[in-house]
Image (cartoon, rainbow, N blue to C red; front, top):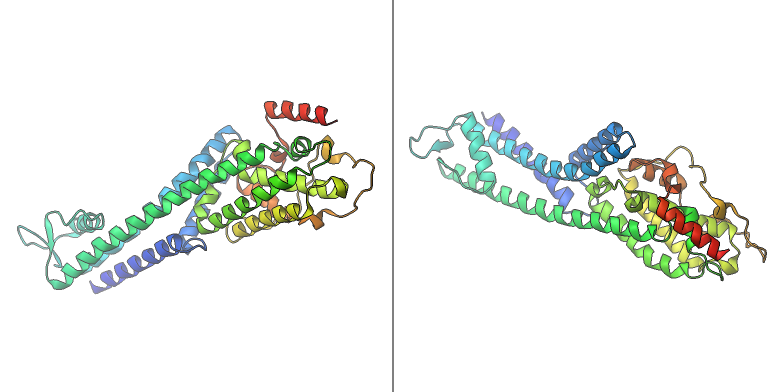
Length: 348
């Protein structure tokens, strides 16, 4: 019987470590928690067909994965304490008959105590089991508190993730759209202040992805609010400006470098467990403006890498890991398309 208690203690200790590594560190989740989250997301991606129904499935997967992780922690603690009590033989007895609790009653006592509701119709027998019962209740209270304090910032970060995506989408729904809408008579000078505003927000979200791995699994079925698509489109637009626009018509070079560096930081924060380096770079998806040669007046001739290049293989992996094809970054809604065409006509 002592082996059951030892096995239960090991399970409780492992679950506590998983909870602690996930909720109290800023470097990801516990190994089992991270593995189960990734497995559930890969399964959702495999089931998803890429259509509207598939995006609805992926949108529901994030909250379910987050709630499922908290449920697994509770079940782990519940089973662990059940084994500890079960190995004690007559450590838990009926408060009226004094008869030792059986296996099913031990399971009830462990769950009831973990939820800090008390012992019900049972009581510990002896000082050791009184101490273990109090420890079980404290363990349950601590696990519940950590779980709640972990869930709230994840939801808040998921909202911030959508907000940032929508802000970037306001610049243009495609790389070509960003080039069209952000161009004025003097070039792209006004884009510098926008990039300076976006850069710290991108870095912050990257660090939140690192601290809360479940955040990566919060998917938006709307392209306008899908941050992977928006970051890819923004990075492609910056590359195009650096490669095809004369230096005197570009935004401040430091602003472009800082923004591309922020996107790179975001990608590397996800590479630890969410995205892998793709084998090949994705194709360039340019429309009329991106492919148009720069106006006469002296091409700078500086390659895109001098604007703070982003590894496009990681960009491709980011987009695909969120359930989107790479071609989706060049897709825009009809309203956005009309606005971009109007902006292009006005700028021309």
